[in-house]
Image 1 (tube, rainbow, N blue to C red):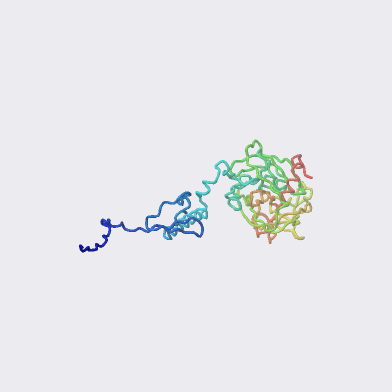
Image 2 (cartoon, rainbow, N blue to C red):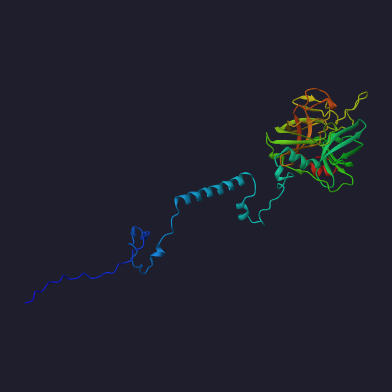
Length: 360
């Protein structure tokens, strides 16, 4: 018997494997709310239909990137706000505005004042001054100066009756220095109004007549006239009171003239009565009383017949009287901030009568 040596079973031979590449962890794949799949180390088979890639949300920006974007957005908003606050054209306006619909009118509808100058004394003066004239009236008593307001382009001018009463000739000077002879069309001594017309005039700038019923105490006003012959003088103030009873002299064609006494010239001294007292000279026995707008805009002899204007450039009154604490007449009677104007509604109601040659 032969001895048999028991052989040990041999291990299978495995050839050496190349080293595994470095492991790179993959990002989690989110399939739906609340469920997350973590792939294993690179040997997970590709997912089956439906593909998971379609359900992967967009990557969330890192905190650093998000902060930078927020700062940029805030800067853009700040620049846009600064452009709007400075009154300049903005990119937003350029992108959203229709060029055909953004054009705006350069004047305020129904007024003489440009939109950019509305509410300023300078704007009112620039717009209305061409419609205010200086009137020189010559009579047996001498020569006097007053003011007037152009109301039609062919030269109709409203003024006070006491400016032209008894005049043998009337000369008018426009704001540009041109002069015209004028004829008296009609007078209304009871309202101290008169209408004259320039001879051979055309293309003049007529004033806009406003609505004196809308005037309120405290409204800002501008007065334009020719005090003491200073053509185109502009003053400003407010409406101090309404419906003041003012009594002025009216032309009586010399009926009250007594022998040995000089006839009083109603154009000199601008006399009137108020509160039972007479100012700036004797009003005589022939006089009339009307309701007036009181203003503290400075008025002086020569402003008579000129315009009282609101801040829209509309005529609201015809300046007609002033108060002076002394009984002086002529150039020595100065303004103390108490002036009176005939309401423009009275003027408009009287125009047809004046054009027919008389007053109502």
